[in-house]
Image (cartoon, rainbow, N blue to C red; front, side, top):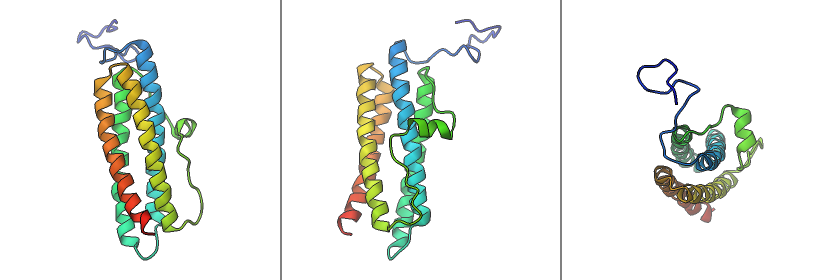
Length: 173
C-alpha cells in the first residue's frame, strides 16, 4: 500500500494496512463478530448502570456497589474490543443506532423493577454474553487469531465471575 506522500512508510488514513496477518475473509468474519460483541457489551453496560441507578431495598448499598463494579468491568471491555477490530483491519460501531442494530441482548426499559428481578436478568445476560464470547472465540481460533482469542479468554473469565456473584445472590432471594 502506498503512503500517499508520507515518508514515514505508515499508510495514510483511508489506506489502512492491518497489523494482523489474517485473510480478508478472516478479518471480515472476526470483525463482524466483534462488532456484535461490542454492541452486546454496550447494552449490558447500560443495563447494569440502569439497574445500579434504580436499585432500592434492604440490600441497596451492597447491590448498588456490586453493579457499579460490574458495570466498570464491562465498560473496560469496550475499548479493547473496538481497537482489536480496527487493529486487524475491520470496522467497528459508529453510533447508538449502530449498537441497537447489532445487539443481541435485550434492553430493559421498565419504569419499575424489583431488585431480585434486576439481578436475575443481569445473571441471564451475563450467561448469554458468555455464550457469545465463546462463539467469537471459536471464530477467532478458526482463523488462527491468537491475540483476539487470548483477550476473549480473559473476558470469559470475568463474565463467569460476574455470573457467579449474581447467581449466589439470586439463589438466596
